Image 1 (cartoon, rainbow, N blue to C red):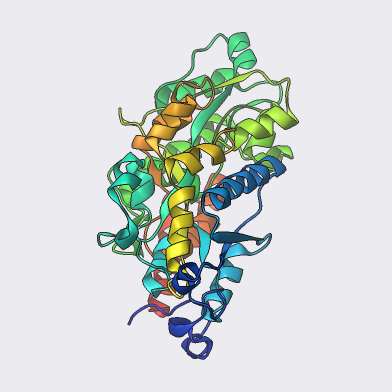
Image 2 (cartoon, rainbow, N blue to C red):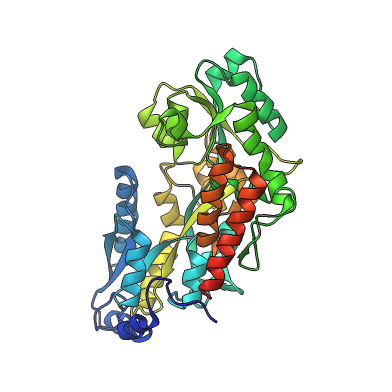
Amino acid sequence: MKRKLFASLSMSVLLAGGILAGCGGSDSDNGASSEASGEKTTITLAGWGGNPTEQDLLNETLADFEEKNPDIDVKLEVIADQYMDVIKTRLIGGEGPDVFYLDAFEAPALIETGVLEPLDQYVTDEFDIEDFEKPMLEAFQQDGTTFGFPKDYSTLALFYNTKLFAEAGVEVPTTWDEFREVSKALTKDGVYGFGAAPELARLYYIAESMGGKVVDDNMASFGSEEVVQALQPFIDQHNIDKTSAQPSEVGASWGGDMFGQQRAAMVIEGNWNIPYLEETFPELEYATAEVPTINGEKGTMAFTVSYVMNAASEKKEASWRLIEYLTGKEGMETWTSKGFALPTRKSVAESLGYADDELRGPIVAGAEYATVWSNGTNLPTIMNNFNNQFVSAFLGDRPLDEALKEAEEQANSEISANQ
């Protein structure tokens, strides 16, 4: 049976909302006819909030777009809380925005519902699709059709405290085995070698490094011997070596906070950690490097967000022009110019010098081999069950193989019940 539109909202609500013929957040005037008559077309863009600098950059980019497209006004709607719940409810009610942010993690399920406009028909050669980092673009494609163009991304990189490294007399680890040994040398006086994040969003690429699969045919498959073998060193570092801890174990709120407080000599974090450390811990001496290899293979995670178009929008031509500008070279360069977000276009990253940036270079380098945090419509269910049981193994309450097997069975039971 085909998956229901949204798990908690019934098909009857969908039909009552008239999504197939809905207004898509637009008024009764058709966008194309408005433009033909010389009137301005107003389109809505919805996204979540950012810090003040990010908001200023977005406003600047939108102002540039409106200046170059005087027949279009963009109404920006910032959804501060429960973003996806709000978007889904509005789409079902026929009041969704014309254009909105979509995280790669949520993309497969939303694509399946048919509420997103396929974008390939609007693309011209000048748009230069080949310029996008391939893994980021593929996160919003299904069966050869593109439903979104990524606006920015971050991979994970190794952040390390240069002062603590110098005091311990150790080099930056390039393999996971070296990483574990270096952690031992760095763990002392209330400082852990590694600030760990025991969650699937950070561990997915590690889980699959021995040939196993986290997800297979849209079902959980992380209970395999290969996945257990791949994740066991992460568990052992905490429970046997005692050289890692999660932030909550030292009173920190997250990895960046733990690193900034110098309760961890190393963390694996994303681009968001750089402005956070600059603002919150400006005296901290640190550097970044690519994540250590496993079995000689590079790996990391990537997180990306796209602009997508509401299939029910009555202002599709204007909506596409907005997406085209925001994810085009000019608009993307403005949006990513301060380094709060990294450009998904290779040419823009090169123009802004991020590949050679002292701190951001390793994050950019990971883009070509990263595993994007997105895999099928059931990943949210799979993630929740994995995280619930994995942390019990991380804390030493039960064996890893037992925890993962139970989590896999529970995840698949829930998935089967919803099909």
